[in-house]
Image (cartoon, rainbow, N blue to C red):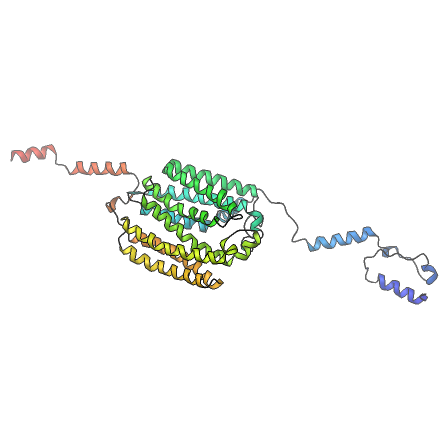
Length: 396
């Protein structure tokens, strides 16, 4: 048995730092130390311990406490949030391919039609991107690259994002249908459907999703062409084919460096399931860019100088794809990805430079053909000789 002094020291040691405990003095304590006086403030009960633990947890979790999503963010933040939700940089790049398709189509261009086509296409792209993020919220949260997206960090609610995607899609298709032509509107609606209802769910079930996604990327230049001609002539299919083939070296090289993320989220990409096929397909479609580029001057859309210049640009893409095929690593994948980003604007610029114009350059940008016809008729009337002048010339 402990002595009186030892018992006192033991109790003081227990109570010195107010250590949370449910230990209470023994009923025999007074027999061990006659000088002991009960101190009620040191008799910690379970309620006191629970309250102390809760207070400590509240202090630790103060910065990470769950907060409900605000369905109505401040109006000043909405433009920035919508820009991020619609993936504005990607939307602008796709809109440029639409403008290229419009410029390459034969006929007299109209500034108003070009504006309506570009804005309508951009709205369709924004709709597809927003709905895609709405569908993939739980999967984006598992990927390092996408976990900080607007919905992942709860900046807006999922319902808000879905409403934005629905409204922009309806506005884009309506604008294309009323201000451009029904064929272009149908292509825009088909692109939204393919991206959100076919490509997005297929990413988790089959590697064929990459081919469907390439179709989505090839439709915008065809929309630009149909906005001009209201038809799908061979030139539209060739331009769409160029963008279709370009998607594979571009996306497959990106997917290679993200294959760990894709695997974690359950996406069935070629880079995850069959890396050799991923590199082989990239090289195959990089080679396909050559005959597609040669068919453009054959159709009379550009001069044959485009065949030479585009071959130089395509050679750079093929070289990057070949290196990626021979040795699939992070360095070669990154070089091919950034090389494809440079390749596409260069190819579109070459199309503009070498285009064969089959019209008077004064009619290249016209707001209204009827207005020009009326202006021409007035100028012809002003140049015609007056009846008095004709009478004087006949008498002389």
